[in-house]
Image 1 (cartoon, helix red, strand yellow):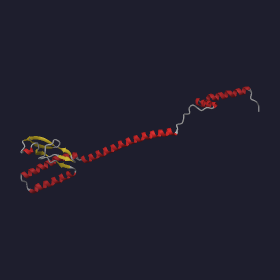
Image 2: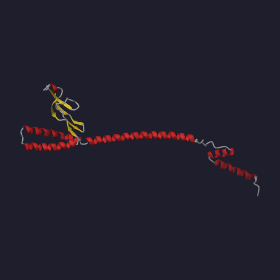
Image 3: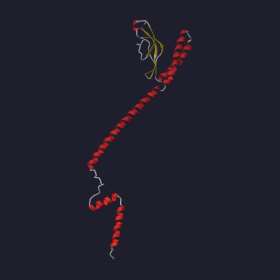
Image 4: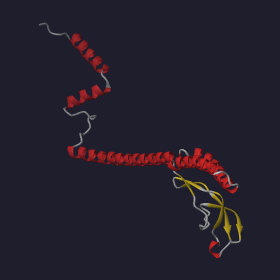
Length: 199
């Protein structure tokens, strides 16, 4: 083997220096650390198992709390939706029934007029039959007439259109006459009774 001459050795050293210059700063640092026999500064200390377990416990508590809050919110939302749905079903026909109430008033007036003018019994029975069919259908839907005559005057149920001297002491502050019937739909007032109150 031929010995390398001094110029050859210098050329090799220059090549090595050029290669070292091409290395990234991280590679240079790791090479210098390897030369010194130490470890790279970039390597972080690994957490112990106890620390990892503690971290996981904290995460578990946070996630569990979030889940419980979300579940409670959803449960409240579901209950409110069901309540609204039931209320909607109960009062869905309210608008239609309110429109039919004047027809019921007309039936009442017609039957009173027929009795006053002594109409034949067959006519009265026929009108009563039609009225009862209609009223029974509405009753199935939850319609209830208010029983107001002789009862204590109550602004929640009654509209006083006038006051008259009470025919007797026991009728003072009570409903003496009903001008227009009041109605409830599934225990909800849809029309107040128009009444005459004794004073």
